[in-house]
Image (tube, rainbow, N blue to C red; front, side, top):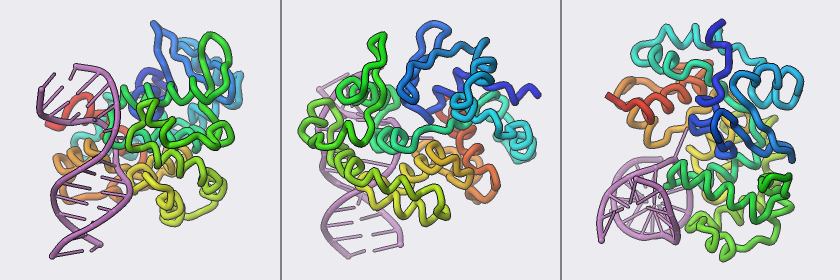
Length: 253
DNA sequence: GGCCAGGCCCCAG
DNA sequence: CTGGGGCATGGC
């Protein structure tokens, strides 16, 4: 019904992806080696014509049903859902999520997006209009720590180098149980429980994931002090996204 | 010019 | 296993 209509603004800028730019009413990103440009009013039609976009925007997931389940929970979940109406969890490329969220630690979303773009411009493939694809592991192979530091990656540079060397680990994640998958991801330097959970959520659509960042710690302490992610099962990941977006943009009062 | 940012590493206890 | 300092960089 109402909440099954995707909202691009909320979906693309609620902190799950660093690949999108907005100019006027147009949202754009380079996905699968091509420049994708969408507007809210034409998004649904474009997704129906394009199997990749349809899956990327998670159009098959029953958000109406999940929301009906979550909305029965205590304050402020119903407000958080209403506030983020039309939020979908994207099905992103695991490799791009891995690097994006290694960059995210002790960093601001604005600067993460900037670094993501810098990596694309320096090591990706130009697809026209001054836009570049995010570099593949092969394109980043051999890139050194000092080169990354010169781009502003800072103390995360050795983490990125390690992730490049261990990118093959992503190949087997899909078939693993959640905890095993998390353990494998955490063998990559710079990947802890939070970043690992983000990879499993945004790269593998694992609904059990419940990334606990600074905002989520505040939100849980404020609103659900005696609870954990089990409260939101089987939609913990979606509940997390609603709470994160609500706490970060509205506040924890 | 400090403060802080979707944490994690590393090292004490 | 738990806790806390340190960390590169730039937006504010």
